[in-house]
Length: 418
Image 1 (cartoon, rainbow, N blue to C red):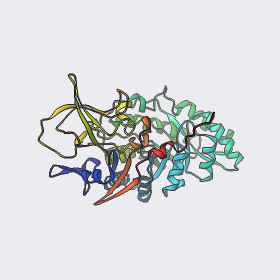
Image 2: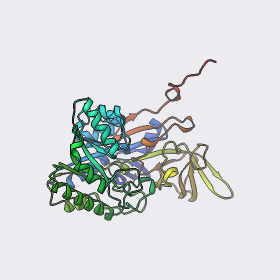
Image 3: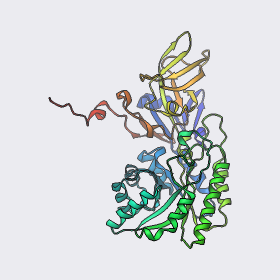
Image 4: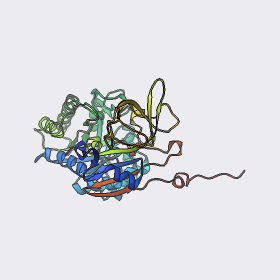
């Protein structure tokens, strides 16, 4: 089951698994995020099965969707985790994740985050600069520990994706150039409290073609061969994530095609393969449910003003990203082209441009493919409470995050008496 197949019409009404979205709106209000447990499970199992008997570890990229219930589901399925902050590490542990199946990525790890990760005995730090390596070695020395490390290599591969989510070019802030990485690995004796256990790369997100993955993997293998000649004991090769999903008419490689290609390229090595999927696991497993507040006609455009906004789903405003928008109940009203916009005081507050829909005031709309980088990137702009999150399991609905209140938003603020 793909994410889209978890959301289907029955007699003209949109359901998630066995639950009506209309009933969810009546019970929990809007806007809200809704996730399908079966779609999430199926996506993980597709990744796992595609490796067949190859030694591997799937490390879910927590930044895509960090809800504790989502992390707990993936942990129970056997997933490891890819984190980029101490807060994400605490979420993983709280959710029942295994620190020894957790990889710490990111360009700006703080000393306190390093200490926390070392105390929990995480699997590996993906180190992104020589300066970070020096700091990590010093922190580990002070704790009388040895830090397991992979260098994140920047292979200078064009991922052919949006520039904001492209991470593998030499002008990006991520990773270490291949030649520099080889020099640092060769100088391992300078870092007695670091143990080099792997090599890592990640070239970007929402990749729709297999060729950039192949090019990056081949460059990683060249580096691995060089390290092998230097008799450095590398235990794993981390090929990152970035597999795209279908938002509209994209045709990314299937999970099986992607994993089979990685296994084929690396067939002559025995080291464990690590991957870091995020969007490909959760993206099409979730939607944002919203209600139309007003329909507004102007001489230039028709607007459908909904109760969700850019603070709930920033991807359209930030990346000009496309999300399919479906009516929860089909009707026979004449279809018109609408701008789907929110109530925030910004012209950039939109969820979709020029969508042909048959809709009325009060109708519900489903913003599809919102399981990744939706709730995790949401904010309180305009003092708007963050949405509720609902997990559907068959015929059951579970609130996995309560709708935020105004009181919670302002709880930490103080008025100063002059």
